[in-house]
Length: 317
Image 1 (tube, rainbow, N blue to C red):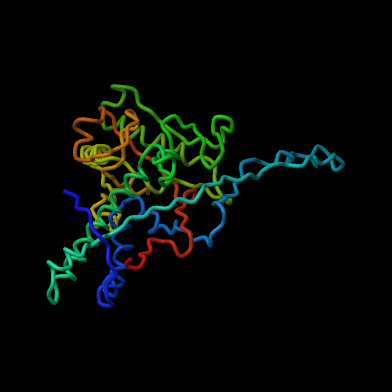
Image 2: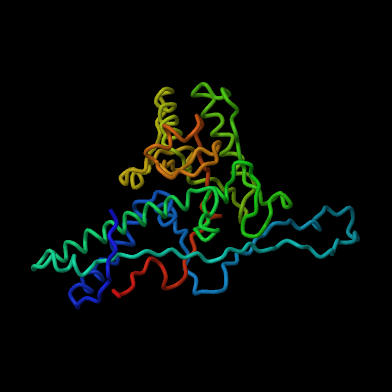
């Protein structure tokens, strides 16, 4: 059971041991979260030096003055064009603590025991931080009065609508995400399942950026969705290519049309619209009979951190 503790200042060796642990904390958190690992592996983390909020300029309109000429003396349309706007996001902060009491210090005297105790407590903080971070980023809405991180499934919604970055996609249809929802019993064969995946993939590939067609490069799904695709590929004798780096971390790593597929235990059933609070029981008692996946293009997604605040560890107090 939890024990109230009094926090003390410690000597140089204890502080030095904690400081040596700093880089491991950062690496382990991102290697244990499939979605964050993918963001880092694809260079989608950006460091910003402060600012009141994060502002992202958006090109949303086309230049409507472009037209063919019927003669060499046609009047060229010079109507001013409105093509750019901005989305904005507020900074979010997550913090936790690792405490050690005077009683624990007294009971763990000796040359090595106090260091071992610190390591155990630090490991527990790291694992708890990883799980909390993963649950936040794969939720439907930002919890704790919207102070949690902006979750993926608030950016990509089941309905394809909502307010993201201060822009309402119901009002501005160009801001909607693509979606494909299967009705009960509509997907009963491997061929139908693959066909629906291909349809959503192609819908997410429409348009382009800088004159180049852009495609999803990540399919983040739940375990059920991943295993269904794996079974479909096996049944049809298909060779499902593998992203070996992702596979080595235990996230899956199959390929679909060049996109890496990863599953995460915190990806919810979007039909139930209930966050995964306990992945051990979610799929047996809380979830419905549906499965979910997000088709993501890394070109349009970033993880922005404030300079000097990227998983830093403060001094003992």
